Length: 220
Image (cartoon, rainbow, N blue to C red; front, side):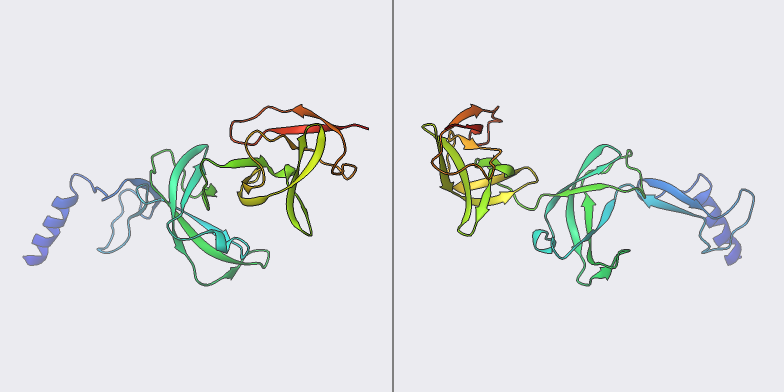
């Protein structure tokens, strides 16, 4: 009698279907219509859309740039999602090329039903941030044995200015000291240019965040 009652109770619970505790996608069905299944046997698998994360590999050159809690932007199928680094492994493994890499996980903060599970994603980690600063295109920065410097056009003469740089992106670098907003910093520097030579500044369009940049035409 007890066994029969337990069976009836179980049937009653699933009579109107089974509801998952989270939003997700059915990724595998392990039974066919009309078949029987023993208690405890998996029937189907569902992957969560509420708890979505992206795994990435980090080389030793970037380890000092990431940390748990840092913010990231994850792009999946053209849609951007806010994320945060929630795990960084303490043990390196070798990738397909034999290079030791560290595994890390970025957990999405705002997943939705537009996400495709199992595909590659683009992850941009915000390692550092600076606001209200002077920036210059990276190609303006020159380096010699004494440090970093730029050339500025001042009163028609090419003048060297030593600078102290801060954080940088793929395109721009923060200038902590050495130049100010409004200085005409020269781009397209060549080996033929020397300090003290006469130049004519050709202003370029400014983006509002950089010191004024100019190309320079050498004069006699």
